[in-house]
Length: 296
Image (cartoon, rainbow, N blue to C red; front, side, top):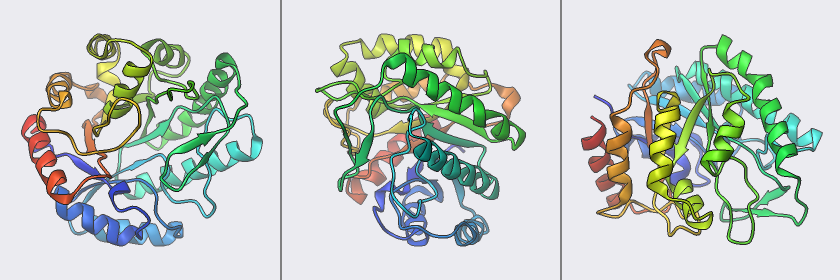
């Protein structure tokens, strides 16, 4: 039976071991390893993962995992060589851990148009400089193409996640269907997609496009390459990562997505992940029950 994963971002700044245990107790041992957590060695994280696999846990990894020694914004479209090297180092470690965790997917953000720093609340603060969209897009494509061969050889599916703009300006790639098309036509068809429904809600609101029309076209064009869904509620302005409301629009969307199958030749099951890190446990349990009823 397919069950929804729960992101360890729920356990902000807790150590990895206790975060896995807490999330696994809520989700029936389906855990997405995310951020933020204190830095630990790859060797220690591997031991923790293997211990829980022995107890019946299933894992997937996302973006800022494993936690780096020094915090940085993972921006694969950066023009800064040190930042790109940091991104490559983290993603190479994530690939290694994905193999140890028997995870067949790893999702990463598409990148940004401006240099950013992470604030205390986990949100990004972008500086006033802004690179042109074509240049940032080109760097993101170049980065993805440079690492995809290694992912393919190791039989882990690399996924790219949609992002969102702010009201002040768009500092992100991969926000609209047109931007998704721009990138996906320049990368191998072995690259998959991670659709964040919370990010979509913000993008459709700020960029003024129809959310349902986007989804129809997105699923028509890329449904068989959609390997993960991130689920959380927000007000259409800020990425709040709240629990889904009782009659959330996302429940209907999950039904539609669940009807479309991924490419069977990859032998990969689609992952649904609740990313409501700003929610009470009772809300999370309720959300997981509703989602599991849809995707079972």
